[in-house]
Image (tube, rainbow, N blue to C red):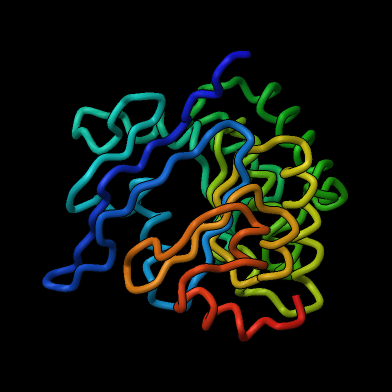
Length: 248
């Protein structure tokens, strides 16, 4: 049987802002089809770690290997890497002046150099996937938060990435809109999309994850399968954090 190779290898990752060390010696790997939820209290370093993986923050130390190539090397073409490792943000980051369709076409045309017809077909395909094809001519201001986030997911998918990073994708949404976004993410997980998800949605993380990372104070305090972390946590900090979610 063929060994599943690592897509990403994060090794001894460190990130400091001035004298404040936010990430301390982070190590983990991402294989094809992994759905990794990253949980922990606010300020534990979760989003900073995700932003380092997407090079929105430059690591202070350590390495991030993508198929064996260190992306922290200054010679690395960041735009090319981000085509393959896409990101969905907490606050959508849609272009306000563009329609839904154009928001989803801009990456394939400008970055991936696809022709407009192919980019439009890709955009419509993924807008259908997230249930937003009826809104292709709408501007972001005409959409609810949940709709904006679904468009943002379609936009990321239109680049046909190998890995999708989600940085608290539901935290800016009203409670009634959270479900529609989580449903889309659940479908992607079932279809084998490789995903890293920073989330406060514990029930969702428990149900969807192949692997869970619990962070505290800039380190990975504990990691394991969903069952191991949620049902049999070993570390006191993990137990204390999860005790707030007794109804899982």
